[in-house]
Length: 333
Length: 236
View 1 (cartoon, each protein chain N blue to C red):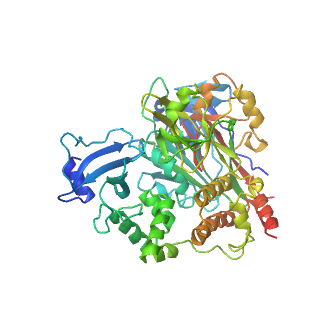
View 2 (tube, rainbow over the protein chains, first blue to last red):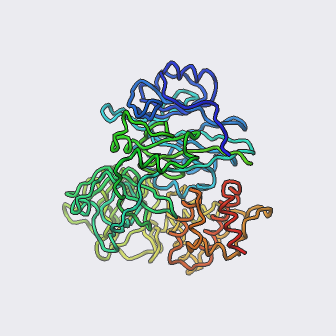
View 3 (spheres, rainbow over the protein chains, first blue to last red):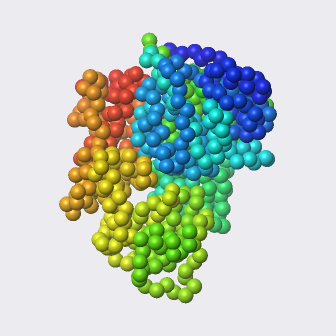
């Protein structure tokens, strides 16, 4: 059974958001850096992003902010900041029963460290962890920030996490919706965990990924996909530079993992709605990827069952790309 | 940081010197080539944090060891010199770490830190730390004993999760029960464990990984009820 949330999340003006903050409830707020700047301190955690799936469909706004009331109920949530030196404590600090919401500034050292080493953090996977990577408007690049709303402070090189305990009769469940799956093509393996790749093995033979993408005229909007015991996880391609034999990625690839390019998708919206499970609809907390927003032309279109920020990376335990992440709070029968 | 300061930070002294250094800010990694022979004229490059990608393919005869971190950057020392058990900035034959880094790891493990905490704090790969343990086992070094002592305590006995001796863990890791696994956290951890144990028969390492899986079940009995039911049924 899914527990209800106090109120629905939605896009709103800064003054409406300020009013909600003054109301004292715990909120997750996403908005362009400038839009977040005037919000008062209070019980909120935030990050910069101007792309949303709002109540009226896909929307890019540098003025509005997206506000999600957070499910709470067993003691006060704890907001903590993490730098590179103590990020490895993230999951240890999480409540025994509850969830942790994490926001990482894109391209920061904490973003890099979490992406590459997060799966090895102590207590990783034991406690529900979800979150997203803060970004910027692609035409008006401002440094991405995570926001400690309790002090209304912007952090460019630290992550913020809200550890939220839940009552004993409830538990949080994290899920993902990924419309991409592995195509039947070549198997690609990498020697190291890295955002920057070149040398690799393709079907067991030494090769270079940038040359491969060029020679096979690959649509680089399609991610590399790995299968994790039935869950497809994407790594999106940022750019490929065959002349340098280098490819930049939006998340790291990992060694000892088989990747294949994704099978092309005809229509994102219909594929998404087909893939969205009942528990993912109107769940307590959701994020989707800005690449899905951009590549699938979601501005002005509506994906039924999801609203929230379109981010520079999604966290469902580990960093994902081109994926929707959701959290449902379940009540024991 | 200039060349001399980097040399000092790495623990190099005459006649050892840095031939060149490459940094990859995106991956927070610095690769340093060292030698006890004079550098060829023009070979020494300016040091500094650029964005050049270190070579993944090493030249013939070159050895590489992971050295102590420089700030938040991982440091790798490359050399054509023979392995050394005494120079702090080189490593032993077959070891993944320099002697200085191996000592740092041993001290942390010896102080009671779990292997997982050490990997997280020093930004190390589990497999490399495990390799250090194997080398320690072979050479009778204390790291082997310390590794075993740092593990997490067993879970509470009240749980219905099968114990570690149950063959169901072998079946789970072998992929025989993948169809029964629906929860994302279990899929991610199981996939990781399967990858880490691929081709490895070492009983002790398998037990450490099985313990990680079991702990996930014990801590999430409510969320993993469906998976647990299937696991218990497979265990019968």
